[in-house]
Figure 1 (cartoon, rainbow, N blue to C red):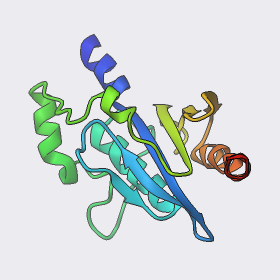
Figure 2: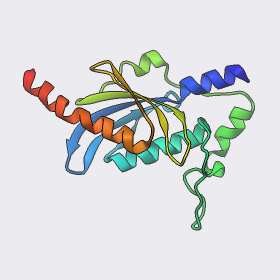
Figure 3: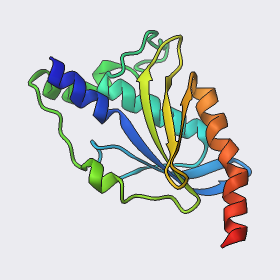
Figure 4: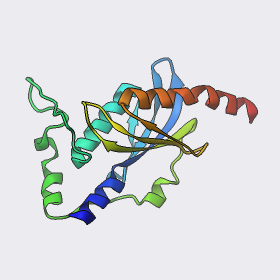
Length: 163
């Protein structure tokens, strides 16, 4: 059980590669160790939905609040990820990309490594590292995570002027 916990903790790390900042917000790619192709996002809302779906898929960190739907299965429904849960029960975590491979992925504007440690009070707590500046900051909610990422926008523009 301890080994599975350690592998899930490392597995919950994602790499966010931001390529464009438009009026609708950031767009880019999201990399995990369990998906060969990146998930592309066109807004912060879409990014948050992908992240929530990924953590529900892993079932780690476990959410303290489950989402409910009156219109059929939601993103967090275990039936949607049933094949994964069956593999996990047999002790199989199917890793398709190593951490070293993920480190090679960079965004055109900025790159962030996100480690969600808890999903309590219907939001996330963890750490985010801005890869280009090697700055790490803790956050207590998904909104605070987005604010930290958005705060780098000014520095990103200044870096473009310097080069």
